[in-house]
Image 1 (cartoon, one colour):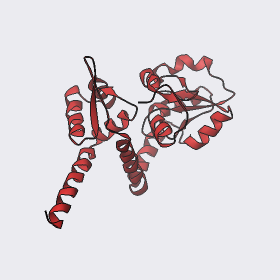
Image 2 (tube, rainbow, N blue to C red):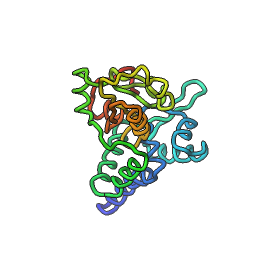
Image 3 (cartoon, one colour):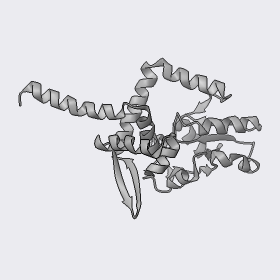
Image 4 (tube, one colour):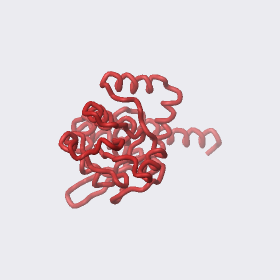
Amino acid sequence: MNKREFKDKVYTELAKVAKAMANPVRLEIIDLLAQGPFSVEQIAHYTGQSVANASQHLQTLKNAKLVQVTRNGNFINYSLAGENVFNAWIGLRELGFAYNAEVEKVIHDFRNGHNSDMNAVDAETLAEMIENDEVVLLDVRPEDEYNRGHIHKAISTPIDKLETYLKKLSKRKMLVAYCRGPFCVYADEAVAMLKDKGYNAVRLNEGFPEWALLNGYPVDSKFS
C-alpha cells in the first residue's frame, strides 16, 4: 500500500463515521442515548419516528460502530458505544453554535414564540447554588430517565405532571429546571409554566449528560 492508498482508506473509513452522524434524526438519537440505554420503541417514541424508521437509523449507527446492542432477557436496548461518541456530538454541537448563526436564531425564535425565558444558569453556577442551598432543582424528564441517574438533590417533576407538584414548591427560592440538554424543550415548558404561576424559575443551560459526563458533578443513582 502506497501513501496515497493509505490516506484514501483512512479518510474513507472516517467519512463513514461522519456520514452516519450526518442526519438530524440520528443526531437526536445520539443525544437521547446520552441518558443511557433505550429500546427501539422508546427511541421511536421520543424522536417522533415509526419503529421501522428508528430501527433503520439505529442500524446505520450500529454499522458505524457508534451504538451498541445489549440484551436483557427478551428486551433489546441500544446505547452509545462509548463516551467518545457523546464527546463527538458535543464537539459538533459547539461547532454549530460557533459558526452557524442559524442554530442560535432557531433557538431564540422558538423560545420567544413560546414565551420561554432566555435566562439560564450554567452548570458551574448551579453547582455553587446547590452547595449554598440557594435553589430547588427540578428534573422535568420522564421518571424512568430520572431513575437512571439525576443531579444530586434534584426532585423528579416530569413535565406532564409538574402542575400537580406546584403546591409543594416554595416561592422563596429560585427553581431551576433541567432535562436532557440545551435542545430539550421540557425545561423551557417548565420554566414558562412556573413563571406564569409566580415562581422565580430558570432553566439549566446544559442537561444531565453534560452535568455528569463532561463536568463530573455529583449525581444520584447509577448513570449508565
